[in-house]
Image (tube, rainbow, N blue to C red; front, side, top):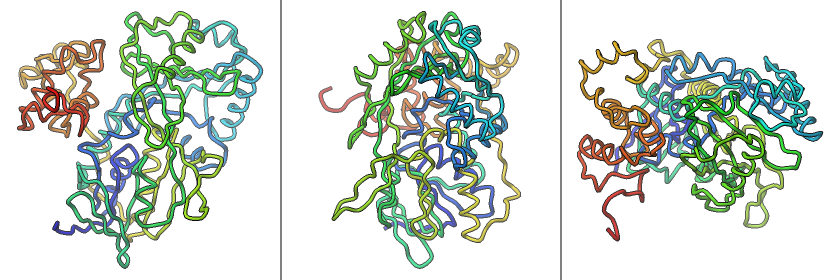
Length: 492
């Protein structure tokens, strides 16, 4: 039986919300821990994200979501500078091709004005076409939001995680929560082989958040996931679009979004489909067909032969529930604001935090950490808290003199493993030291496998480096955790 370990606050879930909550908890004089069911953080819904930093013009005025989104957008440069994460204010265009879309453009402009969003303007079709000549002709109006940005969601999650660790947060991986119960004023958590005791618990378990809450309290909100498909395009001859583009369709339904990423690619998506009881992340022919057809209509010159990857995502869709007999039934209408349940003293449940969850992750984490610290009576600031996380070495970003100096000091940074993305052995070894234990964990941290060949050149070398560094056989290395062995197994 495991020894019980006591903390002031325990965070459940190692996605963006959990990692930022843990980071902000370390800014107080208290003991905190982060618990994650998987072998690594950033393995749930946080890993499939459009990477857009929204301005707040999409959110209903007066809501927590609107307030936090506007606040977070304004301070995103500072956040990314502290954590050494890339961030670019591309600006966005919401483009309309008819009267229904024009009404949406005007409504979102008015919402943005009421929310205090800066840098909004309504453009004529001609003005929008001048900014984005690659878009299909016939634009009737557009909403320009100059504050819209793009970031790297993986880097953001890992940076918050590493910063929380550096400031003293204890981490438990491979620790799925199987029990959560109240004992006096404390919470007792069974997580994998560990037993933790805490005065407060922050439930940031994404798609599983409602299940975790229901270990100790009646249902309040449940997540009924949606599915989405995305396409990633290389842009070898320059960008097809310069802004983030939101296409507002004339028919009711989801339009296309085009996102020029921070690393020079183009992300198209999402398709929108029901997820079912057990949604999967595999792409669907219907979703990919929707993206290709819509992209050809919105950006006629887009070269879809440049697609280098398609991926599926699962997205939270929260509904309040009511009891009917023995069953709990979702209400007819979903919840569009952030849902933070407090069903028991000392328990905060973030169930179904959806867009703009990435934008607001830091702001939500700060808010929850402050409330939890006050609840446990330890709201004094930690004078040793350091909000900054140093940038790991990236030879491709250095000038030739600095790169030579790095290689002379550490020769592994001179051996290129991924030719598409110019990723070196030194970066891969550093990613493993920082916590990567799978091929996808390395890819999300430093990029081998993200380029045009999608890992066909470098995957075996990354696998070998993982095996040697972790001290396991190559047959034990996985692509993305359990049930994704690359070598060996049945039928080989």
